[in-house]
Amino acid sequence: MIHKHRLLSVLALGLALPGCASIVSDNNSGTYIETDPEKSRCELHGQDFTRVVETPNSVMLPSSAAPVTIACKAEGYKNTTAVLDTKLDGWIFGNLLFGGIIGVAVDAARGAGQKFPPRFSLVLEPERFKSLTDRDLYYDGRRKAVEDKWTRIMTDLQTQCGSGVPAGRPDCAQGLDQAKSERDKEFAQIEDKRSKAKVGG
Image: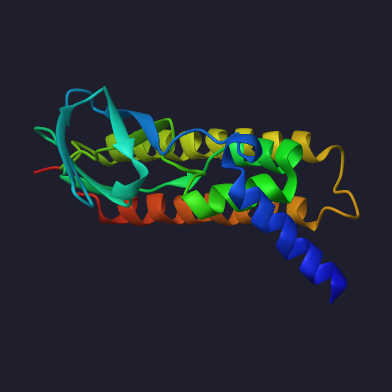
């Protein structure tokens, strides 16, 4: 019980000293939006937020707008919609390392630590393909891009965790398992779209 009271006292002290305890950046973040094909018209809608851009373009987004729906269209391609959401700001880990539990508590109290990703890519699919060969070349390329992306992510995870998974770091194994799961989901989505793509005509 004594330790619990001490912890609460430390948290209270941290909340009273935000200037010293927190090193997290502010709650606005810039996101570079790119599409394939380029020069797509994209409408962004979020909480009290609306913007129309032609890609590629950079947009400053307040975290309070999350989640932001992005609807893009281009001639000869299917209208495509995606959701752009905030994620944990990398600076929050700096707080954990340098500010300890006080810094993290302060950031949670003031709503900091939530950032949109610095880069967001969206692929618009052709309305139809001239042949099965064209279709397969397109989706094979999509699959290769996804594979390369997740290979880089998993390599980074393994580098951060060191060779193998330390006994005290089960989050490393969980992170790798989650990355593999997300990769497989993207593979399944690509194959589903391949099977439904219009060819000829």
